[in-house]
Image (cartoon, rainbow, N blue to C red; front, side, top):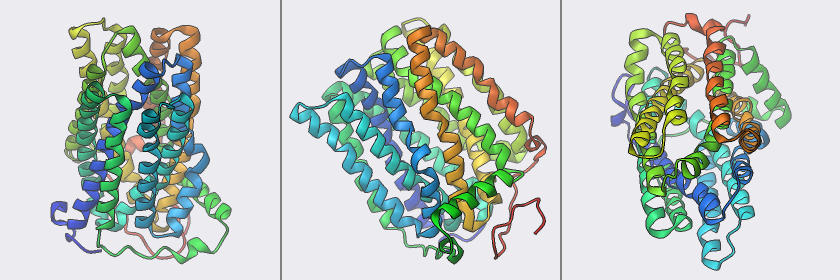
Length: 429
């Protein structure tokens, strides 16, 4: 590993800065698309609540299909070429949206296809990107690295959402997607410029079949006394959050009559909450311990949905919703960065990709089902009643973590990996 030695600032690690910058550019472009795609569906193509939920379903289905193979591939092959290739694939797929709009043949079916392809490619690329970090920086600096990536990701997300709202208002939603296409090209250049030698893949990762490696990763995660409860907590949170976010845009545009610019501003303020959480997480964990920090963050999150339920159209409602979303993203970032750092630190190096992929398969695999359930509930029960139901369900992640042994964890562990086959901490060697 080259760059900054352990204990020195990661800003003196030039390849981490390139990695950090690539993440920022990627997230900024995706922030534009996060505003543009729903607006294309709701405003330009006049999609119903159910059709919007189908778009969300298409975006969230790939973890069920490709997460497990993606993890095995990330452990079998060098990670940087996988990251770069999938970034370019996403850019090519998103380019279809402005081209189809220019040709006058933009349809909901095309949006579904683009959402499905780009989500799958992003997942195949994000698995090696996240599992690449422990080979780029010293393990004792993983929390710092995740915090720095979280800060820039949230800032870029905020800038992207604000930019997306402005560009949509100026040029139209379909043309705004062109900015995301450009961001993927820049991201690929930055990832390609990293010079730190990547460790060769573990030879044992190629000994068995892909199916056997996937099964080994699942067993590893499910038997791990620390990773397993974190995975269950993340699954509960992701499922409920996906249920809620499926209907946010429709509710804000149709019930509260927000404009594209207002929607972009709200998402931008929410992303700034992620910045605040990423900046605070390291100090909070050092002072209070990871268990107390994660439990407190999860306990606060249900209350942050109340402004959305109680707000009326107008400036006051916009301010209260923005404040709630700011706190919500801050808490989500704090608990997410903490649990991710714990999982990375505790995981055997040769299992990093499969550990991450198994978590994505289980956790994110609930999102397409949650999107369909939200669409059905929003159609049958109404948007407000469905959002109220989801808000009440946000207490589940807190209860899951509270019932686990993680509540006694007082510090982020620093585990020195040993050579040899994967070993689950807490089990006989």
